[in-house]
Amino acid sequence: MVEARRASIGDAPELMRLRKVMLESMDDEVPDGPWIDGGIAVLRRQLGDPGDRTGVFVVDVPGGPGLAACVVGAIDQRLPNPGDPTGLRGYVYSVATDPSYRRRGFSRACMTALLQWYAQRGIAVVDLRASRDGLPLYESLGFQRTSGPIMRIHPRG
Image (spheres, rainbow, N blue to C red):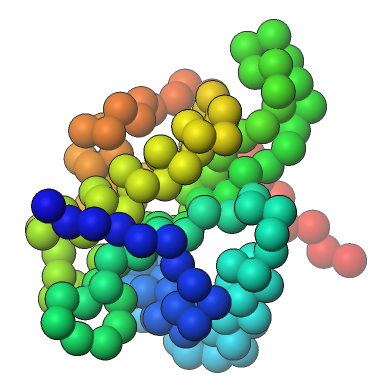
């Protein structure tokens, strides 16, 4: 059985490497750049935050250095409503497995650990955006497609 562990501050560079792997699975090419160093800084801050609003779980490369898989999720505070009386929501925003370690249950172990982390904190709703490759895993864990319309804007100052 594959075991996931909580990520530490020292995992931040590998987490960003895996984030790039995830982004490249959705696009042809993702350039390196300052976004990687910015992400490392954000992860180090979040992983060191005692407020525990970010859940990051990883599986180490078997027998070697580095990470084979990871998941990054957060808890957001929204205004409560009748179906969500606390207003606390989970959002999974990065799931990745190094191509050399796919189909071994590593992402499943990370997602299972994250979902348990959410449950321990009383989070009743968890959202994510699924890639085509990730859809079977998420459906097998109980995620369902929603009918709600999503709209987005990129405000310019």
